[in-house]
Amino acid sequence: MAHNDKSKQEKIVFVGDSRVRRGNGFVTPPDYTAYPGKSEAFIPNFLLKEWMVGVVVLVGFLVLTISEPAPLGFPADPSASVIPMPDWYFLFLYQYLKYPYASGNYVILGTIGIPTVAFGALLLAPFLDTSKERRFYKRPIASALMFLSLASLVYLTNFAWTHYKHELEKAGVEPEHIQREEQALENRLAGLPPAGSEPQAEIAIVDKDDPAMEFYTKATCISCHGTDLKGSGGPSLRGVGDKHDKEAILAIIKEGYNGKMPPMYTAAMNAGLTDEDLDHLAEWLAKQKAEAVE
Image 1 (cartoon, one colour):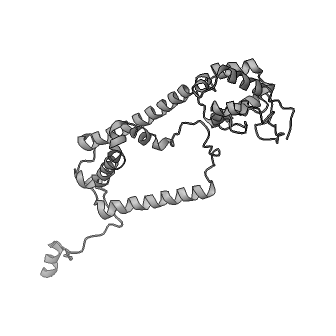
Image 2 (cartoon, helix red, strand yellow):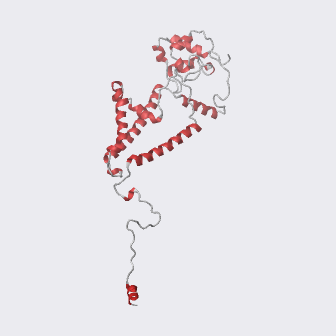
């Protein structure tokens, strides 16, 4: 009885194995934001994630290019008067290579030296900048370089495009796709079918053996209108006599036409032509009517 009474007053304590933790079900592991200044290892953890995302994006691009092929542009015409221009994502490099320190005697520096340093620095950035800070304003050097690079890309791209438009205006050149768009708009407003939607009769050249054909070649008209007068970056001159008479054609040669064609009088004079030659050329072009059909 005494033993039983004593046992009722004692506290029972269960002793377990301290190496085994008490489980409370699934515990979500804390992310790295719970450890200020800490981050995951770049190799292999972070790099593996980047590679996996890159593979997914690449597969997406491949599927897109297979399902929706890129449309072909207009056929290349080496005799057309054009100002070459790269795609928009190369505009900053296009402008950068115009500067004296990246071209001419320094072309190796501009095409190999500086790009190698830039891309090498980008590749080595994770190893050169080992700061544990994740806030950009606490990493002034890396953040300053990033903003400087972005500002340079935006500035060079905008400057290249603006300069390209000034060059077009100065040379009086209108890109072919703009000409086609304007022609399509004019046809639509006039209630006509789109250009090229219906086959049209071929207009023949009137008086092919006329000496004016030589003047036409000398005056460099072929650069825009082609050797066969069908147009080569510029409008066709076959049947031009139905739209303009001799005086109007002479005025176009001397003064240009509607901002789409620059004056060609000075170029013709420099090529060795005379006013009589241009007069004969305008007379011959005025004869180009649409009556004759091949």
